[in-house]
Length: 173
Image (cartoon, rainbow, N blue to C red):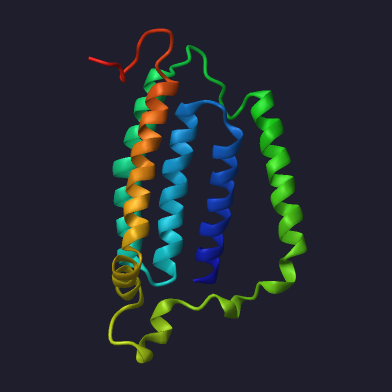
């Protein structure tokens, strides 16, 4: 299990490097899908299958629709790929930065600190991820409302930024 979790975490970091280093929205969207899947795999490995499923469905169902819409509006005829020289330079810089930072904090990570939530089940009546979701809705309701408004504002900002020289999607009728 440790090897699988290590593989998922390395893939997650490499996917984040691929998203951060690529200026083209098409390949960044593919990287975001891969990173979302690997992040959900990490959550499942730590004992949160319900939270992983909710994250995967909401992320891919909501945010990628807005991202695909903005990528379609800002279409490039010849996008830069992961094999082009500037993107490879950025990827090397990011990988060197990640390896350098992990070298600084390497002494604090141990295999015994990866405790899944299922090993603490004798202290609770519910599964760990379901209790966390209930706590999020009971104590964090205000933050959920604020997050919904921020996502709506982000949608309007993306529509305004991608409107080009014409009047765009937001106009006075």
